[in-house]
Image (cartoon, rainbow, N blue to C red; front, side, top):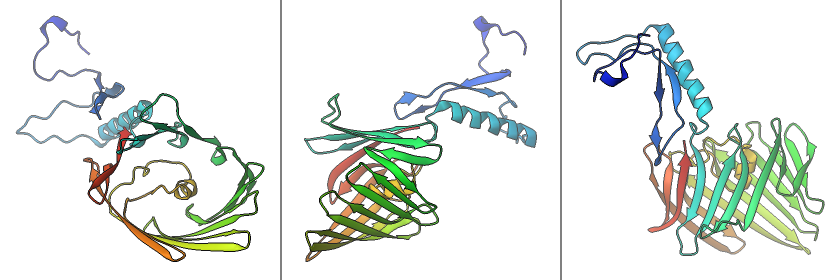
Length: 277
C-alpha cells in the first residue's frame, strides 16, 4: 500500500490493504471489524464482477467479523411490560447463544426479584435454577431439586413431547405437546392432587414472522416448557380448564427484519422487546 498523505486526503476512493467497518444498529455502534480490501468501488455506469476467490475471501472476512462481534446474531435482551407496574426481564447468553441467566426486575430497579440460571456441560443442560440433571437418555431427561422431580420426553427433532412433574406433597402434573410447521399448536394437561384431578387444553395459532427466540440455542424443549415460542409468534391462544374457557388475541409491531418489538393484546400494548445484534 502506498504512503497516505493524511493532511490531503482525496474525496474519492483510495485502495488500502484493509478497511475498518462499524455498523450502527439499535441506537449504538457495534465493535469495529477489520475487513480485507478486495476490489475498488464500481463506477456507477460500469458493471463490476468479483472473482470467485475474492468473494470467498470477503465472505470469510465477514464471517470472522461476525464471530468476533458477539452481537451479530439477533438475540432478545429485554422484555418489558407496559403497565405502570413494569416488569423487566433481561436475558444473558453464552458465546454459543444459549441462555445462561434471566433476571426479573420491577420498574427497572437495580436488584432483581428473581433470577433463573442455566448451566451447561458440553451440549447438555445440566442445571436450571435448583434442578440438577439426574438421568440422561436418548430422548428422556430427569431433573430434581431433591424434593420435586421434572421428567421430559423429547421428539426426534428436540421438541418437547411430554413433561411431567412429581411434587413433594404428592401432586402430579403432566403435559403433552403437539406441533405443526415447527410451532407448538396444542398442549393438554392433567393435574392430580389428593385424589382430585383437573384437565386443560391450550391451542395456539401463529403469524409467519420471527420469534424473539428464533436464534436462541438453548434446548428447544426447555424454551417450549417455559412457554417461549421458538419459530413464529402466537396470534391467538385458546384455553379450556375443566368447565371454564377463554381466548386471547395478540398482534405485533415488527422491526425491518421481521422480529416483534411491540406486543398488543387486543388494542392495548402488553410488552416491548429489545434486541442485540
